[in-house]
Amino acid sequence: MTSTPSIAIVGGTGKLGAAIAYRLGRAGYRVILGSRDPARAAATAGELGVEAADSNADAATAGDIVIVAVPFAAQDATLAEIAPHVAGKIVVDTTVPLVPPKVMRVQMPPEGSAAVRAAGLLGEGVRLVSAFHNVAAHKLASDADIGCDVLVFGDDKDARGEVVALADAMGLRGLHGGALVNSAAAEAMTSILIFLNKTYRVDGAGIRITGTLTPPEA
Image 1: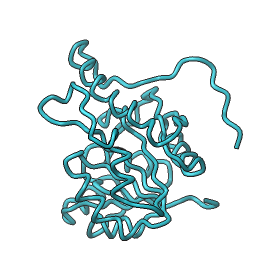
Image 2: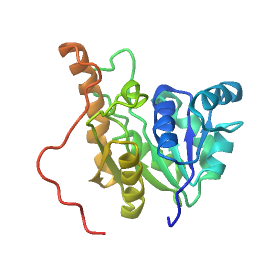
Image 3: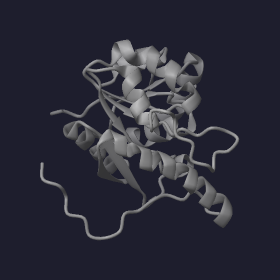
């Protein structure tokens, strides 16, 4: 994209969605919040200083890039709602297949990952990317330097690059993680991080890739 894209947050009133909206709004992006509850979307958008849409579908229509930040249990219905409005767009799925009450155990769906499941639900013509699985929402909702890496997955390298840039703009470090199927590793890591948080009393563990990384060639 040659200009700064507008960002729709589907499920924007949840903890992760609102935190992403806060960071991107602070970075100067036009952000549009969507929700199943228009009144809640308006209230949250007012608090964050961003725009609100009347529905998730309206938000998806308005955004150049659409970030889906909903629980795994809501993934099917949410993607069905926005599917008619995202053809040709970058859709960023943040879904982690957590299955309460055993959220500290890795429980992947039959498709292998929530991202691959999302690809099947949205169909061809959507530039699907998967990211933001391993960053604590409550830390993202502050101005703190989190020191966290965001692994970004997708079969479209240019689309991945757009989302890497979003992560960088949010004060994180976005890194190409390879093909969409690789998202399974980051999704599974979330359950491990939850276990670490409880076992070692960590306030929102994240991941950081060690070593000196040379930026990939364009």
